[in-house]
Image (cartoon, rainbow, N blue to C red; front, side):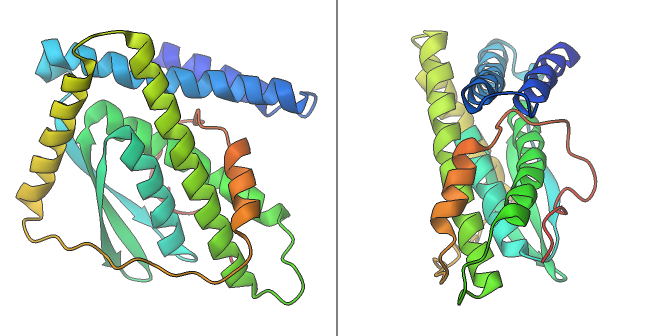
Length: 234
């Protein structure tokens, strides 16, 4: 992402996070930051359609560490999928190595957003009160599940809005082709990939986490670096 775009997003986030902002003002700043991120993805896709060398298909590995490593991995998958990235979860010690596949611009967006959302989730969990009688770990896992699901829904809506705004008749074909190319790249590396069984969670934190996901800033605060899986502690 260009420095100019990052500068715009960071300014919007600083305004959104200002304690002096009303909830309505904060929501407006966050919506604008999300819009910029989504528009950037569409712009890059259109440019790459004309010149594929501008945005090649690639991959990267993101380490997700304990505690709550599986839940953090779920958050990364929830961010990656709406941005047209695919990820493979590999066990690594007490955490996971998440192998992401996608176009360079989409991988950048996914890691940027994931890094920011991990911090926001950590802050949200720190302020969440576990009800009496609830197991803290079970409550936090369902909180993170609710947070991740709402974030994914918001990202899909932002991406759809950016595509509609672009108004390019060929946009759907461009994005479908990009998704196919990412899938082919993944299949080359993991020809015998298996789908993990559906996870069942017990705990009452889903609604609180979903509410936090609706408030979450989807603009990102900076590019992810080593150890981006850190941030949420037990």
